[in-house]
Image 1: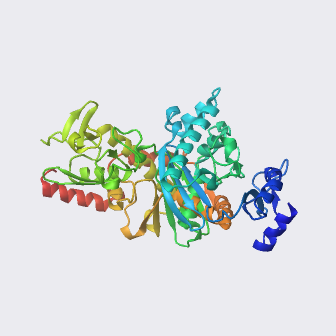
Image 2 (image 1 turned 30 degrees about the vertical axis):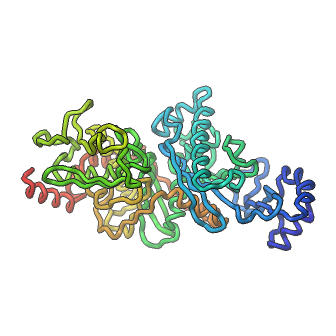
Image 3 (image 1 turned 180 degrees about the vertical axis):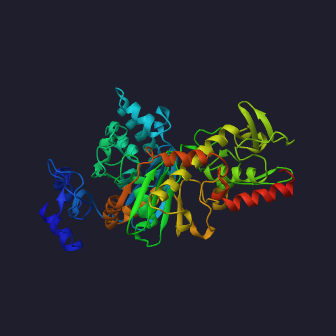
Length: 513
């Protein structure tokens, strides 16, 4: 063992290395069979001591977790995961080249126990509930990992480590930690900072040496996914005043810059990820991600992910549909279809009025794809929660939308987000378009960075400590803003003067006032 450690110091300048006991057990035979030519896998982590708080600040130390025969240094891969309440996304990275080889996703298997974090916490405290929830998300992750390996043509034993970002509840459930006290006053999670754990101990189907890194959380409802997004977007390094919005089921928001950050969570529901909608789906092949409407005949033009026949509607498609239907005066500010329009695409469905986005003959599922009034109501509630959260957070800092230098939007919408459409429906504040930046899946963005850089691990912890949480559930202002935002784009025209002027002009042109 001493000769191996000496070789690591001499060849790579790595000193003060701790070693897994399993490595020591296997080492004598391995070294001799390999003719003393081996490759070591090292992780950098902090070592806690009995009774010591997990939120420690000492330097990271190298730890030897695997020794293999020969030179395997060119086969070094990592899997990064976004553990969402609704969807689990994953990517596999070539750590030598720093490139993403494949991406995969699936609905979080925990959905069967509830759509939101509160219902899952309630289930977790039932007998056997925590184990069932932990096993459900592990099964989903294992499926995503298997798909990634197949797509990338990588062997399972070549994975060196895993990195996961998720909200506080999702992180607790993945690690098998009781989340009960997240929803009980004073709303304190078991831990905001958790050291790396052995992935196989959680049931993840990877090598026994693989460690799972999870992002630190800020509070009970502001988790590692938003920390990952802030890290990946570089917000924590910027001087300009930035609003960061992670538009997903948990709806997390950050306001600030490199000097200060405040954050909040506003449960928006799964609508923007395709959940709770008649034909909603994730932003995968066949999802309608763009939509245009002829204002005269109300015939649509749709664009799908992968340019295949449509299978459903993803987040970006939903936003564009609502904006187009609104601008063409097909729906009112309350989200209801006009009943005086004689068009075969607007019809009475099983559960109310609906618009036929694609006829069965043109789809990949053999049935009409529709957008219902119930779907629209779900989207309106989701966008109202996000808008109210943003406005309440800005008010707490005595700021207004026009004070913002930049708005960053994260979310699994598809390949892009039409910012103008998002403003039209009242999801985003009405600001010049050049102030907006779509960053895609922020959780995966940050997870990729810390997979490639030990320094970024320290930055992630620094970002989490910088954030001050604002609790919206106890805010009367938030509820007032939420109720006012339950219209398209808003109850009060002063929040969206440009949108309202444009719609008035369009109504006049089309004679649908």
